[in-house]
Image 1 (cartoon, one colour):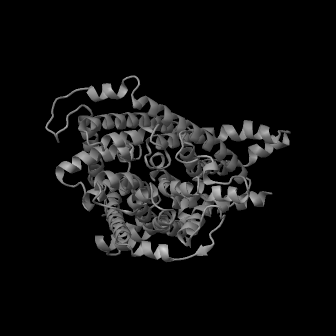
Image 2: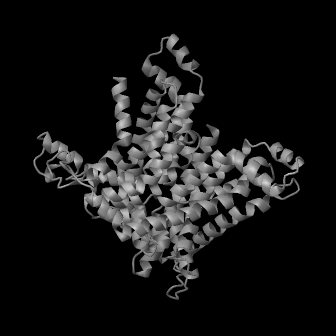
Image 3: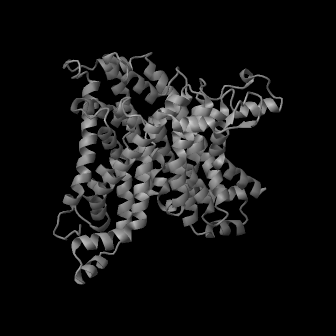
Length: 260
Length: 283
């Protein structure tokens, strides 16, 4: 009995992928038939050769890369002092950096929409990337600061005593010791940006089209095969990332869950 | 990069803090300016509370949407909490990380994709409907009950439940696994039944974390746009959907009302979040 329950639980977890695959790779699957009867890759090929799909994926990847690199650069120094130092106003700093996780993206996006329209950032990739940093930065800082909290600075002093220069220390001691957390932080900044719908819609204003935007409009009235194909393309990066970082997720996964 | 003890920590914090406070502060300021009718786009610069009045007057769509949002919120949060509790208690009987890994898998599907999956599965010509037809329960797609894009928000609620159960289960599981098994065994030795153990031993242990988690879920659902926009109907619409429709309305007066609604949502979500975080810290 227990095994049946557990098997059912695991089945539900992979069900979306099976469902998308069934719709994406089948053809002439009419109403009463419980399962696809004819398999084809033509819908899928058609979709991935479509210039709109391709450009939306390219834009999404470019924005997400930009966002993860920028968040990392902004987060590293902040996370270091938050993880290693006690100072006056530390709580205040936490609170401010934590705010984006409380204020709804809806309100942030609507306000930024007006601001970015005025300063000419609306409808640009820079504008969208800047907006995406708001939800990714707190997460990157949390992940890295908990890594810094376990970090022993004496390794750096030792390297210094042995004659390493600051750049060498940073690259070969600090970054290397933080690698697992850096990887997780970067990947998830990438994912949060990649799957961002509302902020992209409000800042991109129809000029910056990413995959979630395309998927949303398809799902509001497209055919099931197209919807399923776009869904598969959309979840491919998250599925791969989760599969490869499953272990680290035990520590950090739930923190970002509500970001998308 | 090496930070010297004499070096002010605020220098390191400055880039991140500047980006966050400038962007958040500016967006909030613009939101408030727009909500009081200070719309620079059309050159109108007279401050008025008309949008607030129009939004909050009796019989406006705001109240219908607020009711609908609360209905979706309370049902989804309550059902997910109960089911997550049961699932966590059941899963906690086995050690090991496999189940947590499996639950984390749900992260691979953002709310948008998860809703799309429900749409394909539960619509009247969807997979479940086909299975029902194969079993002879229905004959045409129209016989299948409307479960998505329905008036009662069933599709929306189902979507949230599916996403929030794993979230809450992980929270509860981590509490259960951090406690020693002792209490449960002691209670069992003293003759407590399975139900009594759940009620008097497990529940008090996980309650603070579960409540805090539920409030986080509540706050998230209250301000989330994609799910009700995709799985809901034109009327009644959830508050975030209403806010965005007003905001994107070509009529600029409607924009102010959209802003008002979005600010009200923000206020409610922030209050709920603060209460939730307090509980989490105490728990």
